[in-house]
Image (tube, rainbow, N blue to C red; front, top):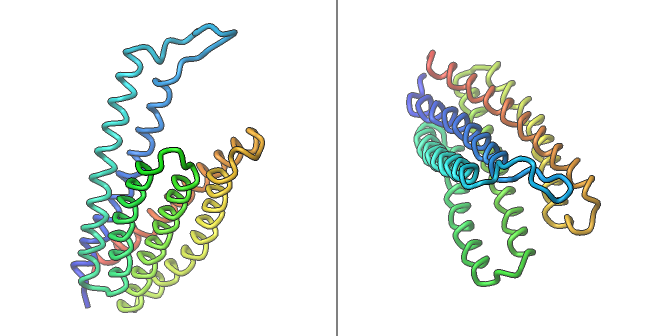
Length: 222
């Protein structure tokens, strides 16, 4: 039994995740060029001069384009995989709902520009939808492992799902605390939580990429 659509779709998902990581790093690097270093009220590093801001704008633009390409690849990959495994259809519906919710959230942000609660709540809900999408994809991979009678892939999917659930839940809680209670907690706590979110995000990426790579290789070898 072979699943060519799922193999092609998961390959696209793998590439999309790699591109997503590149996009995040590129956009993060833009901060280096957009903020000057100030000492005693005097700028000692002119990173945020016109040249620095231009570089920052280019990095943000490139990162944004890569993110869009990654998002499209993810959508196409899930749609492709759903032809061989019904479980991926749930992920596809969630992504489409996330897009609609993002549009509605943007409209509300313009309608109520002074409402930080609406903006932060929208971000929290979007993160939650992305988490559920990831769960659906991992579940789909586990189902493919079962159809292939590949106990190793199925076991890895279940094992990583437990670990990733733990990582994602911790990251989600940290994000909620930072977004909703940032003004009521000490700056050092916000910084610590920010570092924690970054580390957990990297762990999540590594685990998720590992599972996608395993599924891709297994399906391509059948």
